[in-house]
Length: 270
Image (cartoon, rainbow, N blue to C red; front, top):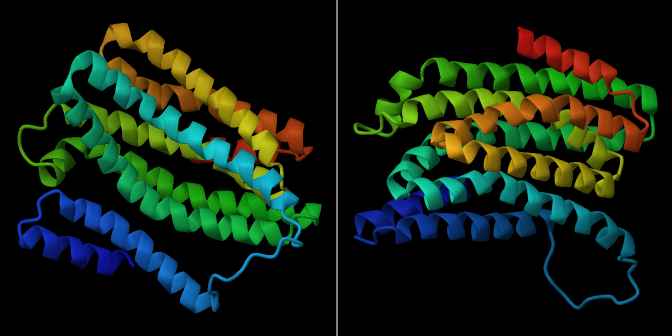
């Protein structure tokens, strides 16, 4: 679906469609994915069954949805502040530097997250095996994605002209900051796996609310010191939220997260 959507975008751009090429790519990817998933699963929409029990789906899905919305808002609040206070030119530098980090990271992170969550859900009631799988999944997840982030940070001065072109020098320090911050933020990913695999969606929402409030507080403090300071929050906030996430996870799920904290500490020190 991604390949076909990209080809569609190229055709629209080549025919003079301008920014509608990006719109075509986004919509095309979603529509084609839905169609292919429906065909491969053998599912077609039909009449609803009012006798089917749905309460558990809503009670689990609503907090997960709320967590996703809070995460999205907390991750984009800095863009709003930078654009409003420092202007559109600096926002462009700020946002493009962030996208250079997020796009490849999400491309690697998304499939790894799906595999980890799928595997852990199958052994959620077997404590010993679940603990062993979480630790192993965390190691497999963290090493490649952390070293990729650090590689991007080290090579920021070379990557910015290559990816964005000339006149983007302001994005170089921001790219390094965002790459490091993204690497650190991944350390707490195992907590989200545990919340979801164990069905503790409300606990995940509570942690997300605390995380979003902490980021908001730090962004407001950083604004008077300039856009670089706002960017630094992206790297500083995960340092505090990382151990906090494991503490809250242990409290709400009764899962021993100390081995996970030690593993993530070993990865980041390495």
